[in-house]
Image (tube, rainbow, N blue to C red; front, side):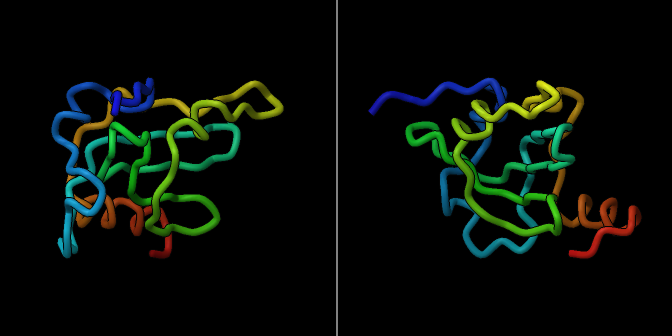
Length: 111
């Protein structure tokens, strides 16, 4: 099966990302990538990725924060009324979920 290519995950992050389910029961997984959709104000942090299916798993901060799987094709093809698109945050440095949790709570997010 060929690998799915995406502009939303760097090659470096793709090399480090565990496959789907690869984080196992880890309650403090490493987050390897960040995707932001400015038009919606949504952000995804990627903790697992299947390059053959183009499916990632991670934390979504939308109306509320929750973990789940998402198709990168869906994010790449979505376009807001204002022309905005989901973009990879190239300034993001991998971090543990516990660190992100501290940052989000400091901003008043409920998780």
